[in-house]
Length: 99
Image (tube, rainbow, N blue to C red; front, side, top):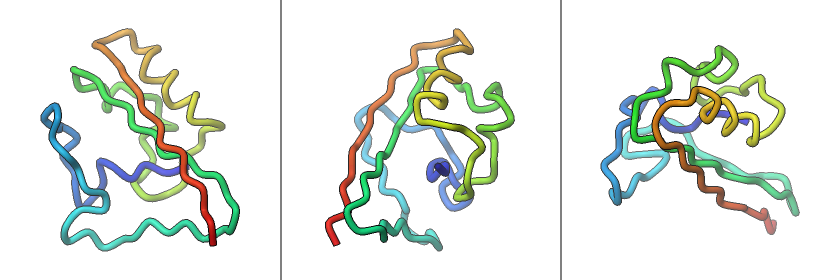
């Protein structure tokens, strides 16, 4: 698992409601490659109406685009909710690699 947004090329986490985001964004110097055939991957988006990033555990503050030391996406969501601040919502996008 790795954090792909915000990242060093798109450093601002604040996004207007209903506004689309493209990841990687224009000028980003990375690609998201899903290379293991028949693999099942998940993309998780966690959003809040207040800034929570600085209050998250150190395990979630790893450098962007590098592996994080968490066991599951549920642990990521739990860390946000455990802060007990703001409204936290999540959405998951399942991805299946076909070739």
